[in-house]
Image: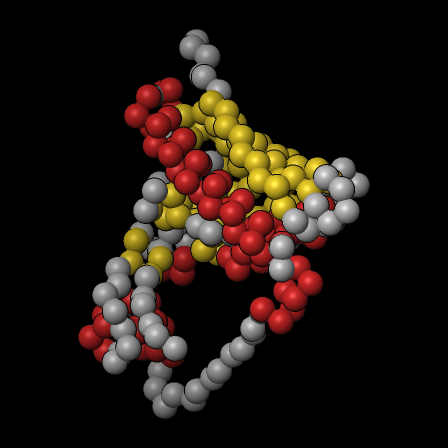
Length: 220
């Protein structure tokens, strides 16, 4: 039986922020759609302070992929090990670690390491995964650095709001309108062209790891 090749990659960035601040941003997966580029949605399934299990939806090379991931958090060492339980195709295994190394008062280095294998060890698939990993990892580190370096005013940068409206009509029609994002540009005055990737309602991932996703442009 052939042994699959393990591909590895690592990325680092120096951050002008305390190690604890950077570790906190990486540790809280529920906030990733705010701070981590490519992240669309995170559904936390289990968390006990040390073990974190969640379902992630994210973009990869212009497509939407999803996977089930498990992480082990070590707050003392500022290290997080992760492994995908159900990897997104074409990977058959994906894992790695986040490590935050203190570099003096108010400074640290963030290290992200990946290892992965692909189905059949096909070169084209390995190149696709490496390109997605490289693009997303560099963007993630850059955004985490920018966010962490504003740590003293993060609360002022976050805005949470909600709105509601009562509709005199059946819930099924409202859901259908929200689901059919491709029709929004025709029905909404501020809508720009949109398309949905994936084929199942409710944001569930299909067998290829794709999820329903809509892109809509609006100016506010």
